[in-house]
Image 1 (cartoon, rainbow, N blue to C red):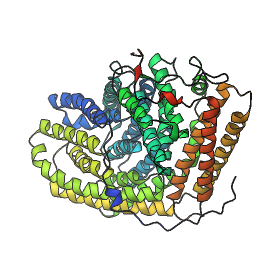
Image 2: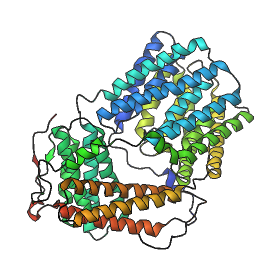
Image 3: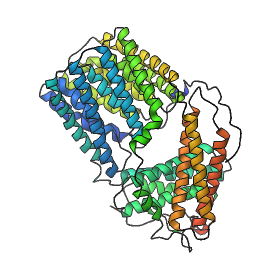
Image 4: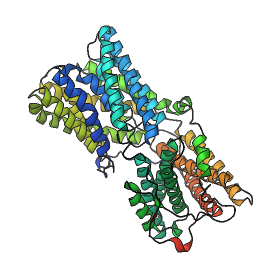
Length: 567
């Protein structure tokens, strides 16, 4: 390990304009947008036909579960969506029972803040998202302030459960048509980012950011492929070989043809046959066609880390969330607000991996909500034409929020804000001016108080996590280097060591980036991080060469061969 002197942390400027800059939309932005409409519309329209518009809020709680897990393979998505529905019902049950037992606003805010902290910690630990905990917190917090009786609770929960089951079906509906769609998209992303890195490296302008993004995309592709723990299909094995090709490009960009990687990526995104890469590993001691992915079977057999071990590092974030949400709600109550949960949810939505990102989210939330209340004022006359018009406006806002939020959070908030305001009108119409004023005040209160709580509760463990990540990279690099230099290393051991080192490098970069955005902490070992990454990449390249993974010079043609791997 290098003894480079840690670089003192610089004073960072708080981004404002940069936080509002629009990005490229997701390639599959329409999937969550259409899914939420398909999940919300049938239960809502049925209740409109029955004349029970006041119950739409409960079915919508279950329907919003359709927003989750669109990036996961269907075998994993089925489980994740089921857990999301159960989590939604659990938070809703606590809120309904609490609302039926007390109308003390301070107690309700306190319960809402604690629920928000639990939801935030569990969603981050299980990496459920987007939209992570925000939807769960919105539902449970809003329900706390709806008058209930204990006798009504089972019926309201049953409505939410039925809508949640429908949302599960909506989320799983594409599986028969494109059973490997999520894995294909993840593989294509890995190939494209590897091609982009190879181009910069071959042009003599190697970018650390491009390399980190490429390694992260390859790691995400492996996670998607490994998430299906059932017996691998022919298509999935072909996708795994393509991800191996992306790994080769990262280790040896000079020997990579970016055009060929992009051609493979374009073919994978479609619904046709998966491209055949050919097998460069024919030498003795290297991985052959039949056992080239022996490391995959071993990784698929490894059990995930226990949930409790993943929750420990999230303690500061959970405390931030609980404190910020509670204080935001209390301040809102002190100002005479009727809906303090708006301030609570605003605070809950701010908390990201570090303070810099939390500040950016605060800026985005405030700007989006301020523009959103203007949109609400504009659509209110249409929404009040009748129950059907109100539900249609809610559906339009749902679609708009998911279609735009991928460009930037503030743009999605422009549609989320009128959606939240329209939901308050389900039991009956209310003065527009009062709703707009309350929403603006609660947004400002939630953002200011929530960010102040983030400043007060700093994550002083961030530096220690960087040290642990550095140690993990050093150990993984030493193991991979030892196996690469050994004359009798087995293919499975080399494959596992290479993938373990690549995963450790991805984790180090993510940990270092998160820690760099924290304030009021000791200086981070930035130079050691850079040196560790450089050494790890050299070892990865050596391991690739030892495995015989580099393609022959004569195989760099962009011609794409195919094999029948249709489902």
